[in-house]
Amino acid sequence: MSTEKQSPSMLSGGGLSRRQFLQQTAALSVSASAFGGLILPSFASADAALTPQRGGHLILGIDNASSSDRLDPAYYFEQYMYHIGRQLFNTLTELNDDGTLAPGLAEEWDTSDATHWIFKLRPGVTFHNGKSLTADDVVYSLNHHRAEDSPSAVKGYMEQITDIAARGSDEVVITLSAPNMDLPSLLGEVNFAITPENADFDEGIGTGPFVLERFEPGVRTLVKRNENYWKSDRAFVDSVETRAFNDSSARVAALMSGSVHFVNRVTSSIVSRLEAASSVTINRNPANFQVTFPGLADRAPFNDPDVRLAMKFALDREQLLNLLVQGYGQVGNDSPLFPNNPYFSHDLPNHGFDPDKALYHWRKAGLSQPIRLSAADGATFEGAVSAAELYQQSAQRAGIPLQVNRVPADGYWSEVWRQHEFCASGWSSRPTADAYLSMVNLSNAPWNEARWANEQLDQLIVAARGEQDEATRRQMYQDIQLLYQQEGSTVAPLYIDAISANRSNVHGYVDVPGEVATRSVEKMWLSS
Image 1 (cartoon, rainbow, N blue to C red):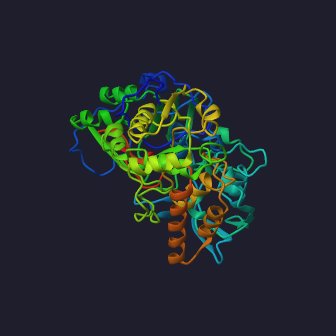
Image 2 (cartoon, rainbow, N blue to C red; image 1 turned 90 degrees about the horizontal axis):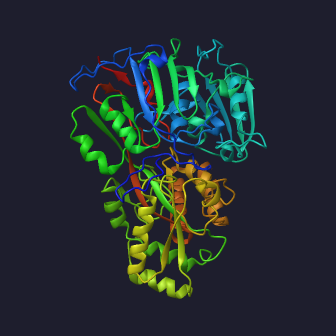
Image 3 (tube, rainbow, N blue to C red; image 1 turned 180 degrees about the vertical axis):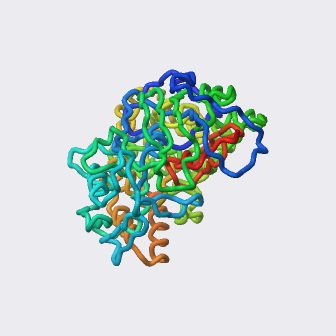
């Protein structure tokens, strides 16, 4: 992320922080000799054979890096460490390229009541240090996030778990306080990486496609191929170098110059220029990031339902789509779910720009003071301040006094988010409906950004995650979205496409629907 002011056309992809904003690190250019003389392969034409080739040194340019980054997955909050985590570790489950659930370190799982789960581990898997994978390793790794004083980003997910136990050497039994049909999907999140029992996660010992060679937080990471990887059809390149490029312009410049093979989070304003370059391929993951403007429901003015409705009708969402991201996304309708989710509702009442309705609810609330919307470029999504200014313009057209409070990116997550009455925020897509709802929308959720506590919503979320009848479950998620849209204090007006790019001699990259952190590095290969 850049701390520079961005134009209204700037685009964000997935990934977001819930910690103090990471100060921008300078884009770093490293010679191949710094990593033992490894040479960047020459670039080939886009007509290279599609049969995967082994060998080569793959270089990634990834943002959201910090000098405080750690290999411990409890501390993964941002895209850079998500990428590193996928290189080093595996999880019990993962996603197929189409977003459906697939076996990972667990080759199968079963439950009779969605409360007691048994995971059967895959045989023949070894860690980077040569140790064979056992159930005790899984128990140790998952319990890492359950400690009372754990700072883990996924601790909230673990509160539903009452016990994790090994049954023999190859089965893990997980007991929940209430049914959850989505537990297997949840355990595919990158934070639930598996390391050997009693190992220090910061040593980076996993079962993943690559083995750690060097980790320089906020600068670069080097890994080499795991010759004993349990997936024989993966890990094609000899090594991967992941460089920290927090500035979007620097990332793209590095790609165009050929000093990196792949970059994440390309802004929409530059996509057309990249599309014209025959040496570059654009990857587009539709509606992968949701823009939100949470209003704090536990204080004035957003404790008033009419203020909430006024602000929902006061935003010109089509204008936001066209001017902020040049159409690289789709308009949102204040649903908490993403369009790629099977339970996403297309039948909610329309919350399109309606100045008359906005002014009606504003006058009904009887407010005399303007509402202050806080935003910072480089903290949430690129162009957040411009988005706030567009919001201000449409609100003024409706007769509602909205003020933009531009704040520093540094300290945004500790001093502004969940502190100011109204602010800019956003979320990456998650593989299941419950993964997002339980993290953000339960009354006691650790990242409940609007501080909206609703007992009916809580009951629906918990009931839906455990409902085994598909028709009943679908209706529950419909009811959740309608309740959130009509009574919640969050304006959710836009979904943004996640756009990445790679050199034309890079093959195998796949955007997986609902995947926060890409596993594609194990599939990517270089044509010579």
